[in-house]
Image 1 (tube, helix red, strand yellow):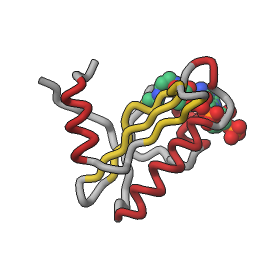
Image 2 (cartoon, rainbow, N blue to C red):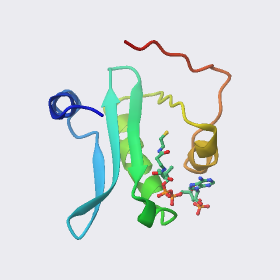
Image 3 (cartoon, rainbow, N blue to C red):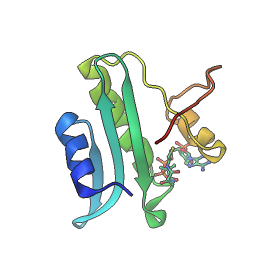
Image 4 (spheres, rainbow, N blue to C red):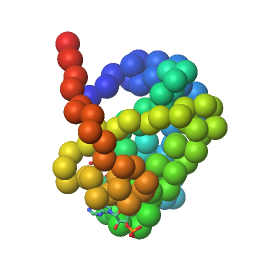
Length: 105
Ligand SMILES: CC(C)(COP(=O)(O)OP(=O)(O)OC[C@H]1O[C@@H](n2cnc3c(N)ncnc32)[C@H](O)[C@@H]1OP(=O)(O)O)[C@@H](O)C(=O)NCCC(=O)NCCS
């Protein structure tokens, strides 16, 4: 899990690109957005289990994608588990021939 300091740093570096959905003051959905000047990125899209299937995930993606595009992001790549491809296609993402790879410390 991210430390609070890391999380703060992320938000400071990427102001106004992350969103939450609340119900009575309780956070029930999140998405973190970031922009490197060329591409936009989305992370930590999560909707509380008890609130899924009500359009909250789509709304969070719509908000973050619009904000990233308004800031100039022309391309927003994501990689996701196979079980989430139907969701991402529903909210506008298209499969590509790119193969996701990563390096971790
Ligand atoms: C993926 C997730 C964010 C979706 O959130 P949600 O609020 O339930 O999604 P929505 O209600 O906005 O769904 C939007 C559309 O996608 C569809 N959809 C959502 N999850 C789906 C799934 N697992 N399989 C197929 N379709 C799905 C919905 O039916 C809806 O379609 P519609 O517009 O035709 O009604 C949520 O399931 C979640 O938090 N999962 C655990 C965390 C996770 O895996 N995050 C993604 C990291 S890559």
